[in-house]
Length: 257
Image 1 (tube, rainbow, N blue to C red):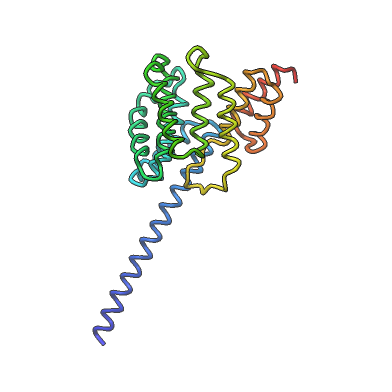
Image 2: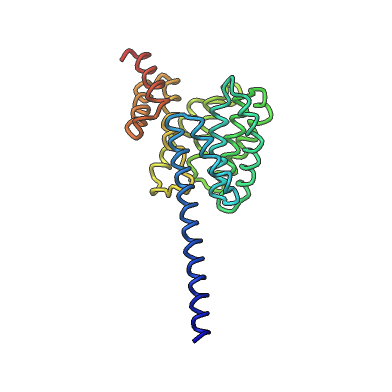
């Protein structure tokens, strides 16, 4: 009888510990999902502080490759926000870490294409911050995108970065608005063919690809196509700050609507 009681006590402790561990795992999963949602929202409202807060959550769990991916994604977007004049301190603070994290993802099973795409995007932000670095980084960026697409030709994010590079690079150095449009179109098609992606999987870029399509069409003076793109973004996400308060109003003013 004594042995039975001891066995029941041990079994009870084991079950309690298992339930406690499962509960802790659920708490951590919820924190990660909340941080992902916060990062997504930060892009819509273009809020650097929200993005920094999300990054802090991922950074604490960076041994988890999913968290490392989202941390690196936040860093890429923070570099984008801080590549403009007056934000150099933040850029310099996180650039090296972002490169290291993207390099780690580039060799991590299941994340190779996403890692190389993010690394290309991070280098692209370096060019935005320091145009002279284009001399050494442009070839490297396109090589990374070639590798990303050879690993996964259906990765829409790689076509966004390629399109932005083609959009931003002067024609004499290989830039082309027509090539940019082709890449943004490819990205949009891939996004729209995808099955619904789980929130914990890489999913950024759909609205961004439509916005860049609008920017390219506007520069080509295809104003109806640009207006269609911007309006499409707002139909999907009515509070997208950049489009709602800048891109679409400025376009309408330009064309007299």
